[in-house]
Length: 231
Image (cartoon, rainbow, N blue to C red; front, side, top):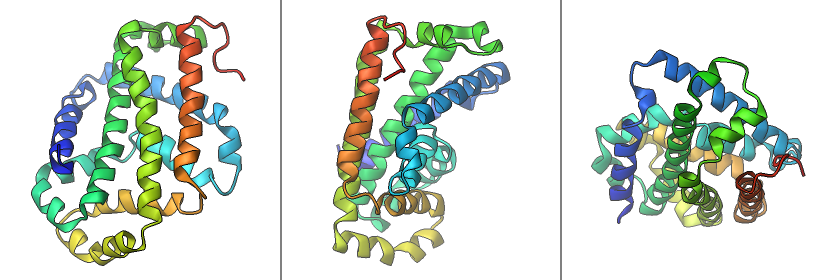
């Protein structure tokens, strides 16, 4: 599929998410789950957040890609006029956008599934034991493997952009027309991702290592390890 076709497919999945409905109770439970996961990720990768070279990039990954903080306005822009966006922005940049969008949406889908499984348990303070019961679903195993694979692949895509002067220059040149066309959220999302990752010597290697750590944790969870989040 082209980058445009991929984006269209991911947008359909995104707007099908239950979180876009009017179920306030479900949304509150989802937010509690995501807050717990966010703190766990910060604890696991504290060494990267403490390193000034990687801190901003990892924070962006946790908040914007994994957490989906800015996903809704970006998705609305793409849905409104995807063909125009494809004409204005380089194909490689849009392909990177598609990869980031897939990672973020798959994460939201998995979070919603865990929220549905835990149900009323999320009305109380979430414990690690309860969380693990919701996470450890055999039918989600392949999707979780795909999730960490996407993070690793995203790093290599960003590396190719950051190291390409021509692509970087082209992206900068279209800033004004892209904003004028109403794609400021999409442009700023990609621009921020490139900017915060630029100080990292190898984004591909960094995200490979992060993904490998998360995959090791996931495998321990599925194996029934009593303390899967500890080194």
